[in-house]
Length: 165
Image 1 (cartoon, rainbow, N blue to C red):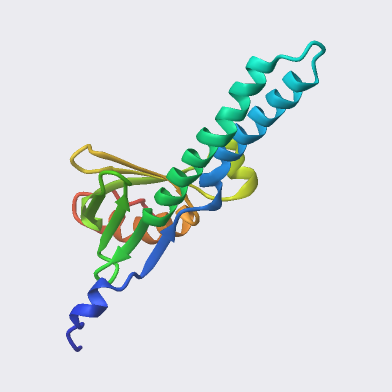
Image 2 (tube, rainbow, N blue to C red):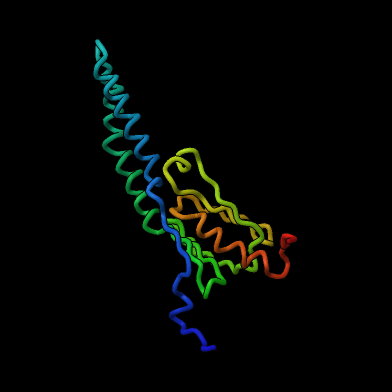
């Protein structure tokens, strides 16, 4: 068997990126404050103060939320590397967080989904290491694919329980 090249060790076997539902909170804020603006503007007498606050939130708050979500979506990555023996996680915008976890260090992996994610797709990856550290990565496009790729090797390594057949 030939030795793998250094570049092939860094190529991901399985990967997941941010799901589009990362933008849902921004959409909800935009719709709620648009509704508040419409309601305040249509009142007789008009509620100009509340309408002005709603416009301010729409003009300043929504773009900031959208920009933050776009930055997070650009950075968020979960990959299975080194010929499927290491999980690499990258998240964080202002303070980047790069984490590498060997599959032999993973005790448990679970996919979690909120109600909107069950309807629209996506989900979160909840990882528990043997040392008790919990790593939670939200808003992934294919968390079940990563979890399925992680669990068989992680369960068959020394220190893990295997199911009886």
